[in-house]
Image 1 (tube, rainbow, N blue to C red):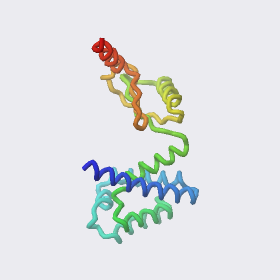
Image 2: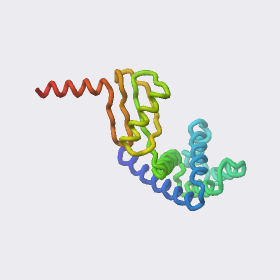
Image 3: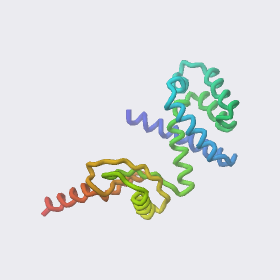
Image 4: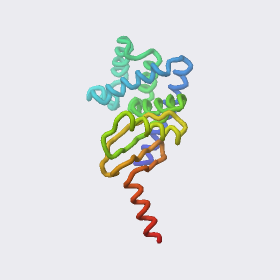
Length: 185
């Protein structure tokens, strides 16, 4: 199963790369990101839209009608409309969420940005959020978009994941390191 997921991710990345390069040529990278985000939001909130995307038994012409209606309502551009038609033709429409995620990453990389997933022990204010962001920006050399979650088990400090790197500045982590050091003595 893990191998199948890896293949899907590689395919989604290829489609996202192609869409991103095409959007750069058309000078509408941001617009396409917004449109993809709206489609993903619709996918996540509408069982009918999920069914349309996932169900291979729904005729291609029916799917195309939905996308044409979205285009006619100016919910999606001609660029994204054509891309969705291609995904439908290739039976890859089910990759739309992964394509969005990879497309967003490509745009962030071009901007010198990165997502950071941070766990802190207690409520936080804007000052603490800025301090954590500054520390991670300095370490990564990029502008950091923080996604903060409260996790009382870390006791204090924070734990952050930026791409595949983990930064543990938590009290729990420091206690674990101290225990490991003491056990080695």
